[in-house]
Amino acid sequence: MIIQMKAENLKLTDEIKDYAQTKMGALTKYLGGIQVIDARVKLALTSNHHQKGDIYECKAVLTLPKETLIVTKVEPDIFKAIDKVRGHLERSIEKYKETHNT
Image (cartoon, rainbow, N blue to C red; front, side):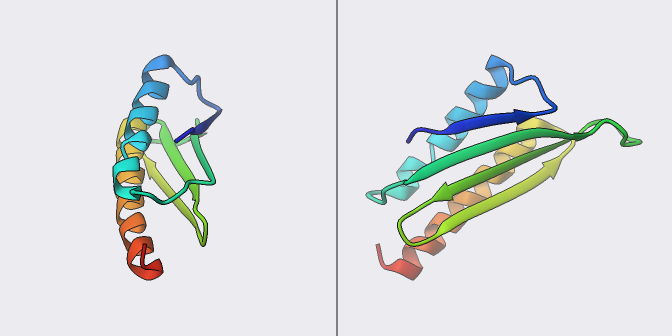
């Protein structure tokens, strides 16, 4: 699965990019034979004006043949946001497979 990454208000370091690629790439085992039309991940620093530090957003858009799965999570740690998006996408893929009998 080829994943397009975009960073907004955030320097996309190799560590963050590799982590996101690994986590999102692991979803292929849940997809089975389902074709992924498009996979996009946006990593962003939402604002520099929060009282308790930085807030990061991870948004993943996975376009499948009959549906588009969109998951967004906001966390104080970018890695935790990526983990939560991956977990939610995992459950969404399972639901997609049940719904579409694939």
